[in-house]
Length: 286
Image (cartoon, rainbow, N blue to C red; front, top):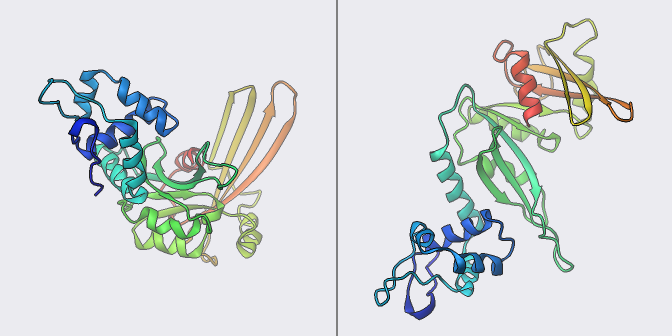
């Protein structure tokens, strides 16, 4: 827990109010500590009261904290602990799940965090496909997303969920971890797994029927996506039960240019556990 820094004129505001105000300032568009302090200073009395700030007993008014107080608090807060607290809060407030829980794991770089003397700040996040953030961690500057995968998901209930991720996380340890947590996976197969990448494209043969086809037109593009799935008895990847092939035809309505892309995946879901339309939606939703 972070102790609340002392604000101006001896008023000690709860640190929770300070953190809440800082988050509210960011949501309102503040992109720096100074901007966060200015937002809090200019906030109406009723907003400060809702955020949990205390009245000055002498004046009956809420004196907002100085920007320095906000800066000291943000600097003192442990980022991982704060991320866990916010993730737990969001999980408690999320609406009741409809059907199977789908969790996407993906990395991102904080906009504006790169400077001349510092590399950009990288994060890894877990979120639902509807956009609710469940957990987030900062990536060690000397590492990558792979070691942070399991710690990120440790605090999330994964029982019965499907966890999607990009090809970087098509790791044997990650597949085993999800299985141990009672979850399934959709894992993208690329050249970082040469043996798997060599075998999987040959599984959904041309004579296998389509499981799903979708035709959309938006953003000046005409797109057709086709999905095939095939079951196999054994493949050298933990708990894999099916291979998937997605073929996407995308035509630019302005230039007439046509691009064709093939994506291959493996999943631990057994045949019949999810229909073609569900699988296609989860792949596209990631």
